Amino acid sequence: MAEPLSIESASTVFTYFNPTRSPYYTVGLATCVALFFACDVENNRLWLSLAVPAYLVAALTLFLSVDSGNNLTKEEHEDQLRFARSTSISVAVLALSFAGKDIAAPKEPNMLNFNINLTICCVQIFLFLLFNWALNRKDLPVADRNYVQITLLTSAFLADTSWNLAQATDESGVSAVHHQTTAYGLGALWVCCVLFWVATLVKLQVIQVQRVR
Image (cartoon, rainbow, N blue to C red):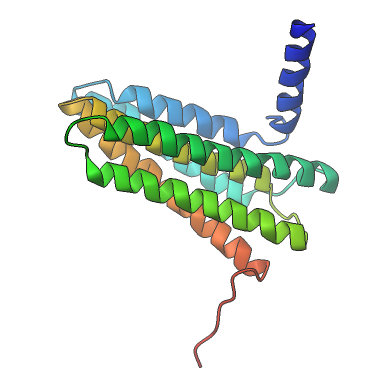
């Protein structure tokens, strides 16, 4: 009984995160993993030769995700987006706990990294809770973009930022510097995602912007 249930669960997850309909998030996830493991290369020049191309791919992936249209049906998009939003909140809660625990573990914790991790995780939790509340009140006006893959990329950038912040605390020397730098770079991409979601909430009129006359 357990095996068919596992296969069915995996099939359900694959249906929600179908890369044929949302191709960019798999590229973004791969670049996040690549950037993390590249930090173990201690030679700065060799590390940069690996990290810079991977980072450019991550940035280009985000741009293409925002710029591309939506090829999902209205029902598919709403269903998958609902699941993706819940996933984003779950990722933020787990990153808050696991990365926060590792950063706080030393006798003298790196409070900068702890506060950065705390802030970005809480912002993402609040943002998607607000987004959930907004979409419970009204649907997206037009699903002109594939919001599913942008949501998943937001979570991928957050998770890898937290992962690198924790690793910068655990390790020492050149690798720690690489992880710290990578965390800042991925954090910048995550901030771009947050700005996109704030603009979306403004479009939904959840956040009101008053023009100064």
